[in-house]
Length: 164
Image (cartoon, rainbow, N blue to C red):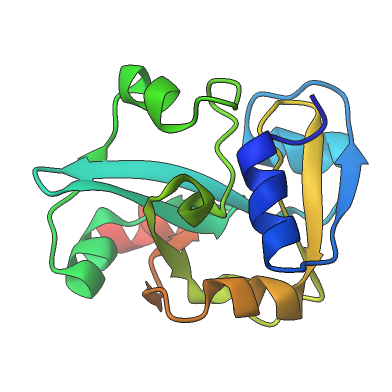
């Protein structure tokens, strides 16, 4: 599978120009950036969160760790990581752990990190562990417009310093 059908349909319906980048199998967003030879900060990883009101997908740079307090401040919701078992029915045409950042293609709410804004290109999971979708930074911002966004993540060094 080069790209999940739901994601491809979503991008085509919105007339988004995109490329598929093939890379060796990887398990994390940071590994994916290295395997695909693309800038780490331009790979947007999707983190699925949940609470009693449902699911939200947080989209952050691959170099960063999500800050749950900052998400709570932005959304007014106390969210936690969704279980792996919850992911399969949400992303039926994706491999487990290969969640596309454009999760509104799956009917899910999205919050995204402001640090992704202003990049020349953004790379997201295509739905498997061997492909990325590349869109221009402008198209990424356009697709994310109207969705909540804020500073919701930091590089792990900052997170360690801030909590210490």
